[in-house]
Image (cartoon, rainbow, N blue to C red; front, side):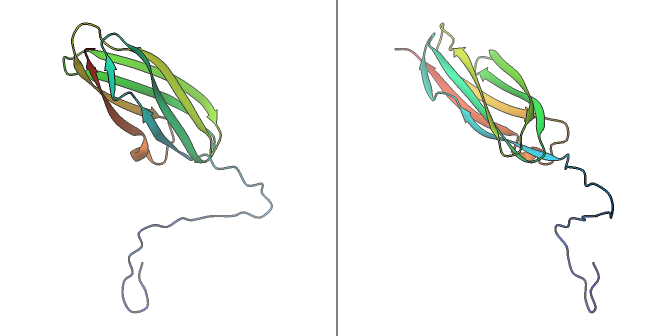
Length: 138
């Protein structure tokens, strides 16, 4: 943007256009955020426990998408959970809880990655979270 005497940098701008005699349309954009990943820090061999992912819709429109939680052990074993949601209102949260059974043969470390995806998400930077679990003997 050029000023009267010197240039001015603009880091963020938003153009809002209003029309007379027309009904404004509701916004269609939204920002989904993976707000929490809850995996156990330690479990015993063969133990069953919950793993949980929480997604928040920061709005302003309702959103639909998919959540995927992937666990990869240091031995290369992979476990994956996937679920979908539709029409999550702006400002609302949704929890996904799955039962997971730890490997029962050898101690290992599990690296978890949770991702929420949706077409039209305006800020995909906050759509991922990571965690880890140590599987140990009694």
